[in-house]
Image (cartoon, rainbow, N blue to C red; front, top):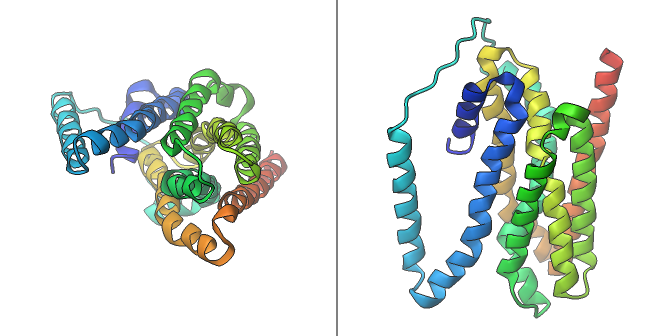
Length: 270
């Protein structure tokens, strides 16, 4: 609910022609919080205790609630006919699957990077997540307009290839310095996957279904992150910790193949 609602809110305020920008800046805020939160959580835990992380989260959420409650509600004004929810879900599913596959790389970093660093006896695992998030934000800030210039599928393809390269580098990294470079490249690649595919997915539904289309599409990243623990945990148990990011990279390559198929299908339709 928190993930999809603010994006839809921003889309209503900015207008459909600024969908990519609305999605991009929302995710900048989200991953900016992640970049700050990882090291901040370590500091709070070490100096004040684990329970103070929970207190900080509660206070932050309360401040967000107070702020949003003070703002005027925004409503859509489209008169186009709505289509059933399941039909919307069917329309966005191919794009959502690509997003979910790309999300496995982020999920591997956020859930297992500490264990991955510990496996190789490396230090500063939190820094790896911060570097990923920082390059994610930089990519969104510098290149989000390329979605309007080159098209969502073209940008998504470039981003997925970049993310796969970063994940392969993480898998091959012999030390923590190269692992940081791999995380940076993966973060840069993942940065525009959500808005690039999201713009294409939302276009398929009527304007009155834009919110539900976005919610259906965003559902796949939630499913991806939810499946990360058991799925990648199984990979680690069966093949070993060192193959974690190889698995993530292969999943992103599958996403690349799906995007290429979507591009061919779109070209054929034209």
